[in-house]
Image (cartoon, rainbow, N blue to C red; front, side):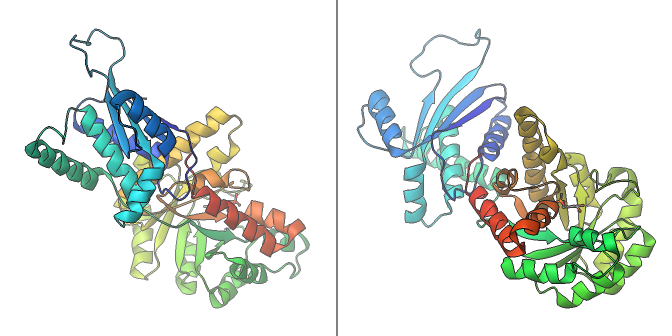
Length: 399
Ligand code: PXP
């Protein structure tokens, strides 16, 4: 990885993750055709940046950003070195926050601006050399920011709750309790922003009557999850949910096992999406964190994608989870850049959701099993509120 990012503090409400900053800097390096060079970025506080400013620049004050080009002060040609270094950038989050308030900017924008400024210094831009150089550097900063920085969500992701498993318990006895419609209302009262149900071909949990009733009772947003199956499509067009999510569906599976392969069924899915778009029902497609599937989903007219977080949730080691997280972050970023609304879900629980909530390209999380399981012991209201707290805290962390 050519860009290394270290953070000495856990900032609140920054609106950007280290992974996204790294990807942003990589895009700049690519633009300048120097992507084989390393850049090190440290995010720290005023105390540390002041110390560095004094030590290396003889200035005893905190500042917003410091850049240390690797070749500074060296006459030799360093091309013989096995690792190519551009240099180090240090950013004070404390100063960045003060500046964001002073200039009425979102903190995320301020941080990206400082990162851009720091990288350009490493690339030999210097606003202190002359007015002409200052103009050149400012123009380049604006160009790079408008090309690669996209302003994102400022708030926490929304929480849509899947109440399928309330029905699973009801179906175990074939009676009328517990009622998923009542569960959905309680979730909304506790703060959920949407209700999700999956009307499966085998009707193992949610029944047609549930969907019709939910259409009447849900006050937030009803998202109907479904396979692209003619019988279910007919019901969906009759119910008119607020949106649908297309998922792959196999009869034998315990739960949805993977994302939809849009690429291999592009023509068929395009027809389905067109039908729903014509009926005014936006379509989301549940896909693995795969850049090609995202592109295919955008091509066939989907408005949303839901990125499958199952492999991340099931990871057995920290390394495996890190790898899956990076795939999700890259996929969310790409889908956002393509103009899709990005949701995420599957297997998320009270331990692994915070990190996903930190991704500011993600608009909504769809969570079912863990919330309903906890509700058995704590009640629905507590279970929903605990999850909302985790999402809120997670959305303010750097991962
Ligand atoms: N998103 C989709 C597309 C799903 O199929 C499911 C499971 O029904 C979920 C989210 C919720 O997953 P979980 O129940 O593991 O939270």
